[in-house]
Amino acid sequence: METNILLFGEMEANRLCPSALDLLGFANSVHTGRVGKIIMALPTAGPTMKETVEDMAELISGASLHPVDLVILENPAFEHPHPPLLGVALKSLALENKAEMICLPHSMLYCQVAATVATGLGATVVTGVERLGREGEQITFERSLMNGKWKATVSPRSARQVVTLNSGAFAKDVPERKRGAKVTVMKRDFLKTDRGYPHLGMRWPESGTCALEKADAIVAAGRGMTATPQGLDLVRRAVGIFKNAALGSSRPLCDAQMLPFACQIGETGRRVAPGLYLACGISGAPQHLAGMNGSRCVVAVNTDPEAPIFNRADYGVIADAGQFLALLVKKYDERMERGRQIKDI
Image (tube, helix red, strand yellow):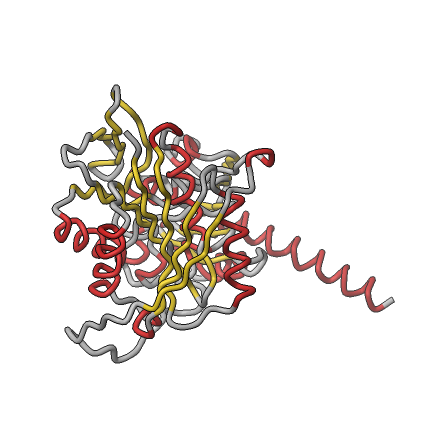
């Protein structure tokens, strides 16, 4: 029996977020014979430039193994996060396209949307999905429990499921020979409004802390960086070395108000999947590992050779994290200075 899949992608400034491509990776994981129609909906605040739509369609084409109907939903209210209205839009699209599986990124915003949609459709909701499986003809979902200490495999009983996907869990490059899926673009004015509350404005945390999910590199600080006053300053300087980088943190530093909670990575914080994750002075509690498990390359620096973080690391450095970062920053500054001198010559 074929399954129609509805993907609700995340947008930022009329640009497709990486989490949207993760949704396509999930759809690719569904057995080919079971995939019916794939619809990806993108909420935007207003008319999208033709070139931007073409760029998005090209990205989607290269990330999907199946044809995709790309629906651009336009509503001025989508300029800001609006869970109730997003829930109305998603429910409407699910009914219109007879979608049996509705997929969203796993975040605080989209978990709220998922709950709203599941309630409205009488569907089963499964959050934080990390892996897709099968038992006979039945699709199963794997997710973490008890702060990552347990893995649960669930098999929903309802015909329709709403799932949120962990960042990076289904990120996978499509072989070049299989790229080029057909993408049909449709624009639609979504005119419904919700006057349940007025939007008064947005306030962002300090610079660099609100882009964790979209960062290519993350330098994360743990307790080991608080031994000296300049420890966190070194972490911030290290962030500046990398392109499109962000500052991350383990929970104890946020609880102690040394860093804002927007920096927290873990089961009760943010889930990230950067290309590089540099863990400085982080022991590797299960809660923290659950939040950064999708990282493609993990470099851990810790004085304790038995620290659990080394079990997840691709590269481990047994050293004082402060001394390591001081040397890293020094070498970087020296290289940049040599480059400036050569340029002046």
